[in-house]
Length: 347
Ligand SMILES: NC(=O)c1ccc[n+]([C@@H]2O[C@H](COP(=O)([O-])OP(=O)(O)OC[C@H]3O[C@@H](n4cnc5c(N)ncnc54)[C@H](OP(=O)(O)O)[C@@H]3O)[C@@H](O)[C@H]2O)c1
Image (cartoon, rainbow, N blue to C red; front, top):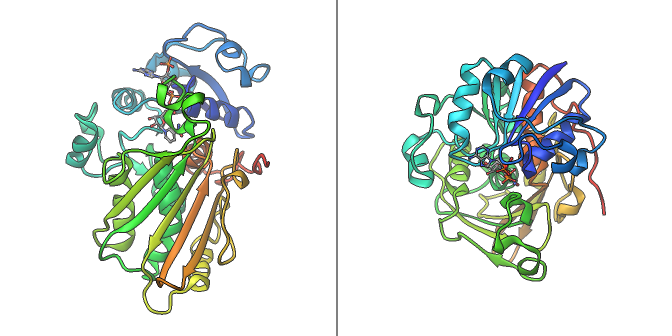
């Protein structure tokens, strides 16, 4: 059994890690570590784990975690995560960090978007935890930077097209994405509470202002082996979970929807979390809600000549906790789908 602890366990992604690890056949959940609620019963702070996880939310202590665990998930806000990740790595743990602190490969880019880094010596040493693209690196990594939710939903549909050279990379790629409110975390904020989200939709941090922009560009540029620019427009929509990314691309000659589907199916062969719909399919976040699955689709717009690619995921599962567990599985030599085969909770 892999002994696993979660730091930041009382937030939304931490709770999701608790849910997945409590049912994982090869992992034992040894500690749920919190912050402001340390010492309170797990059942009170995370009622969904009532009867499944006993005891109290623990206070953070790297030495104790290292005595009890082989691996630790860090589900902390960016900035708060880096120093703790450094400490936990120093204590010999394998660390799966869900924050943005180790996802970027260029420290100057990190500083521009997030400010000073809390553990610059460790920066650039993590594997980027998108298993479908970096499986081998994750297998050998002691620090995995689990991708952001928007980058996961956006990069997965585009990756096969760039790898196969089916689309142009000169000029920007347009990513229009919708997210549910759990993407903003558990802490109450006026902009995400029910009366201000339930019946409206709005974009935020558009026009190159969202912090996931450099992460998406980093991964797409790696795939294209050329600098890729994106116009990224995230929207908050009235739902709790889910991301739908709709990506507009200019195809090269012969790259119709059927060719894109064929390329994506070949690219994701052997990837249990990714399902490619038939051409012209429209994925729905409801079809993946609660699961570690991504649904992808490709449609040709014959009037403009463009390709519209889509990716739907659950932001808390394939966009965070499930993907982190997928990385744990790879790192510890398990089948990557272990403990992650739950279908969506549809409807
Ligand atoms: N939500 C998503 O869909 C999603 C998807 C992908 C990645 N992520 C990333 O995953 C991380 C966690 O996100 P989340 O949505 O789970 O956030 P969240 O719901 O706000 O939870 C944050 C957790 O970190 C703890 N915490 C906050 N400040 C802390 C500090 N200074 N020191 C120690 N612990 C602290 C919180 O404890 P208290 O409540 O007691 O403060 C809570 O347990 C973030 O970096 C986020 O960007 C989130």
